[in-house]
Structure formats: structure tokens, C-alpha cells
Image 1: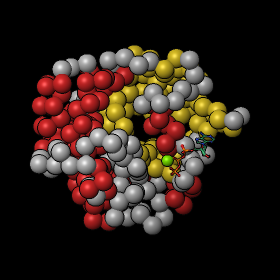
Image 2: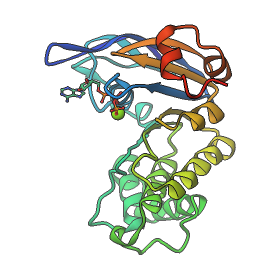
Image 3: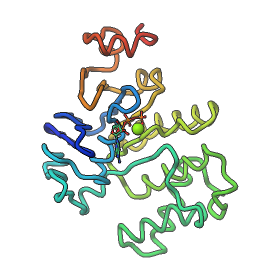
Length: 244
Ligand SMILES: Nc1ncnc2c1ncn2[C@@H]1O[C@H](COP(=O)(O)OP(=O)(O)OP(=O)(O)O)[C@@H](O)[C@H]1O
Ligand SMILES: [Mg+2]
């Protein structure tokens, strides 16, 4: 469903991604792990079309959606891919409902009434019914992240990229958001790529895990394989506290 073929990316002359290849099937929950600075966010941003790549290609549903700096496709197909960020990326001057429905009107070009109905349903599905008129300044971090997730659900995103979605949260809210992500897997059948330093969550929830270092995929495999029997010395070192 989503394929990265030999994707490379340079920033200021440094190769940030080096021939990264991923192959993600519909409905899979994929974990992307690695040290700080290894290139995880850069991969997600490239898939989401927020930044271009220098070589290789990103293919979604048989369409090349990105292949170089000047070729990043923004169309109905690529807009099926959504992203959830560590710091929520919401609009603070809009209330909860506005944050979910206004993007729909802008991107999906549907009527305001239809967008509001969809937004309310999505807010309900993340446990925020009754919060529609609240201002963001009155929400906890966990609630803000729920709004961000409701926004991607209302967009009917088929692929959701989570970049450290729980790392700005207190442990309790972090657990709640992880539970919600598990629920998304069961209820909405979305395909997810999860970048997280919460390795036990990755181990428990992901089908497939990629480990990267210095812009390269070092090793990949099923979560149970990678966590119980990593082959590469660098993977072993990274997972040393999690190997069971
Ligand atoms: N806009 C930029 N300008 C310069 N260097 C950048 C830029 N964006 C990323 N980098 C560099 O690219 C490398 C990969 O960064 P990236 O943010 O993808 O890492 P990451 O794996 O997400 O790290 P973390 O776990 O800390 O979020 C880092 O060395 C970073 O300094
Ligand atoms: Mg990052």
C-alpha cells in the first residue's frame, strides 16, 4: 500500500536519509525506532508530503507521490495520509470543533454543515463528546492530542503517521493516548506508522518494526522477532533493556 524505494535526502549537504526502503501493507501497524537524530521524523515528514526527497520514490496505492524536491504530489490520494505530532499542531485561536471541521471544509471542500457533523462524530469516537465549544487553552495535553487524532479521523485518513504522539504528555495521558491508538487499529482499520521511544508500546502494538541509525534502516522484522532476537549488533545494543 505504501512503499519507499531507496529514498535519500540531503539537508545542508548531509545525507539525512540513506537509501531507505519500507514496504507497508494495508492495515499494518508499523513501528519506526532509533536514537534521536536517526531520521525518523524526516521519513514521516517525507511520506506526509511536508518535505521533498532527493532521490528514490514514495509510492502510495500505486501512485508515485514523491520522487524529488520538485515532485511532491498533493491530491486526493496523497491527502489520505495524515500525521499526528508531538506538539499537536492545532490552531489555538479556534475551539475544539473548529480545529476538526475547518480543515475538512478547506481540504475536502465539503459544506460547513457536513463538516460539522463529521467532526462531531470523530470527537465522539475519541471520547470528546461535549467538548466541542471548549477553547484549547482549557484542555490537557492528552485532550489536545485527542483533538488532533479526531481531526485525522474526520479527514478519513487511511494512513496515520504518529511522530512521538505521547512524548509531550504526562504518564497517565500518555497511556490514554496509547489505548486510543490501539482502538484505532481495531475500530477504524487505519494503517499506522508509529515513531516512539516507548519501546514496550511498539513491541506490543506493532506488526512490523524498522530500526534505524544515522539515516539508514539497519534491521526490520516482526515486532516479536526484532525484540526477542535482534540480529544486528547495533539493534541489540539499542534494545538491550527490552529484549525478552
Ligand atoms: N531542517 C533541518 N535542518 C538541518 N538539519 C536537520 C533538519 N531537519 C533534520 N535535520 C537533521 O537530520 C537528522 C535527522 O533528524 P530527525 O528529526 O529526522 O531525527 P529523529 O530520528 O526524528 O530524532 P528524534 O528522535 O530526536 O525526534 C538530524 O541529524 C537532524 O539534526
Ligand atoms: Mg523526531
